[in-house]
Length: 259
Length: 223
Image 1: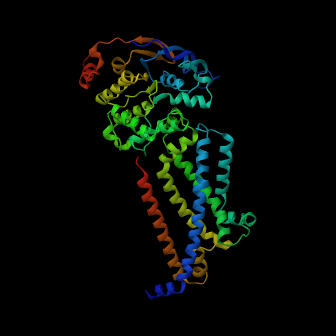
Image 2 (image 1 turned 90 degrees about the horizontal axis):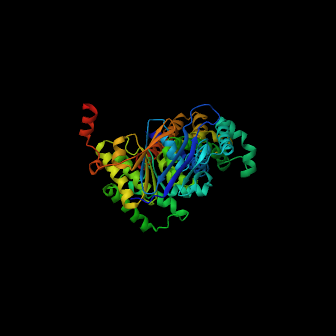
Image 3 (image 1 turned 180 degrees about the vertical axis):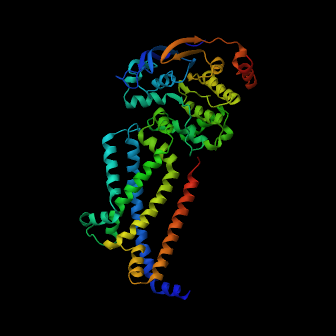
């Protein structure tokens, strides 16, 4: 179904935050390939190293040993300029979203286009930028919120603005850290729809950290389980059509409380 | 109330001249605060450990300037500056000369206030700047300053009021100004009513500055 080429590759990655000090490594000997076009989940308990693994991809963290390649480029070998170019080609959504509170939804989404227009990585006129932002607004279903400020939005809406900001440059790769952790079942569904649309309609490869196994089941093609910095297993996920929608909150409650 | 009209009749022109001097000193020093103090405070914030342009040497020098200038009791700073003022301005006496040390203080005060305001920006914003591949100037102008603008205006209000108070001391080097006028023509010649009148004028100025600053700051804030 998907081209089998590799977009992200971790090769024997070890990460220690304080090298030389005898403490367990944050990541230990991780080897893993993410295929172009897949939605890849990373699951694990708190402190398992999920966020660290994700930060290696866009160079926010450097590995202690081993290499990470994105589209064949060794991330750790990039100079400042190369690193900026790499990061502009990767969409990132953080756990807390972190929107600019004094900018409207529209201006928040437009930010990456403005940043990219200076060095030519985004060659768009103002009009084209506005159109691209309008497209993203409708893609995440927030056209009616374009001129609101982040403080006026709900958690799920803010998360979708974060996704729109990450996707507006049409990056081939999207990294999401716990995109649904603060959301309830119905708003989680909205966010998951955006993520799966990103893959289906924009061809984006998605790597998503989550602790919610329902999210993995509905969304992901494969998922890696991290345990105290080690890769325990990569699970392929098979699902029937019925698995494609999130169980309702009622079903979740019933399953958790009655079983 | 005839004493009031009499006071205005006799001293009105002198009060206006003094207020113009104070206005000149405040305007010049606030200009220095915004043009030099704000970038200096931004520099401290950007270059500190873990900042988006970490640089220990620059950070230390910028911090040292702010700390040293802020350590001086203001009167001592003015006196200490006299030879330096004479070398740069050509004279150590008069309103322009008095403004010179005031500018140094304004820069230090506003730099520290700027740094404090920037520290209140959630740490996620610099993180997003890095993840989006923003250059340092882009992070500053497109992200940090827009996020901090409301706080920066409020801090400038506070700095302006401090400077109004500091400017009173500049009478010792012939700076003039409204505070000096109250001392010289009110307190020192036992014209208490004149002194009270000037104090009331100063209070009204402070209230006005505070009201304008507060209103502007609130309007800029969408958090």
